[in-house]
Amino acid sequence: MDFLRQLDLVRPEALEAPVAVVGCGGIGSFAALALAKMGCAHLTLYDDDRVEGHNIPNQLYRPGDVGRPKAEALAEIVRAFTGTTPRAALERVEGQRLEGLVVAGVDSMRARRSLWQRSVRYRAAVPLFLDGRIGAEVIRLYAIRLGVVVQGGGGRPHRQPGETVRGGRAAAPRDPLRPENPHPGGPLKGRPTKEVQA
Figure 1 (cartoon, rainbow, N blue to C red):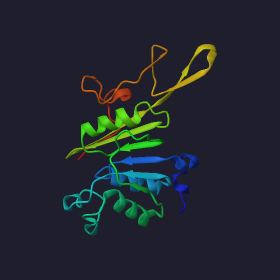
Figure 2: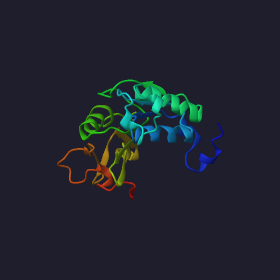
Figure 3: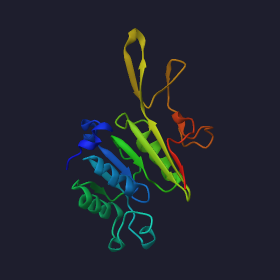
């Protein structure tokens, strides 16, 4: 495939980075196809569910996929559309070491919190975490960039996984999913990167 049109949006070497799509439902199925069409060559699709009839209207699956594992059916669909062969991981993410871009397409706050706390938050190998949320009329996308370059002693840059900077000093990252956090979007101060009302 020729991905020359994407060169204005993304550097070619960035397309070689690993991408983990966690949850292959309403968000994850379309995100996986869009990423593959952009040229992301190293996709891993995580989901332990099977396609059910009620998934057909709002997810990328075909009627013939009912009963199949979601990750496996989605990998086949992505391959048919793009020629890219994603790895289908028929498992729930529960503390696995993820790397690269992580797209959260999970369907509960409990699953989001577990993914953030156990597989993303302190992982130096995860530079960007995207958390999508869909309601009946609203779509929200939270983007959390996990690495910050901080000037240390002697003018040398220091980077710690997930650090943010407060008052010129490195501090541990806030948990954007904690209920007592007044800004649930963490570094984004609770504002989604994009909100579309139907």
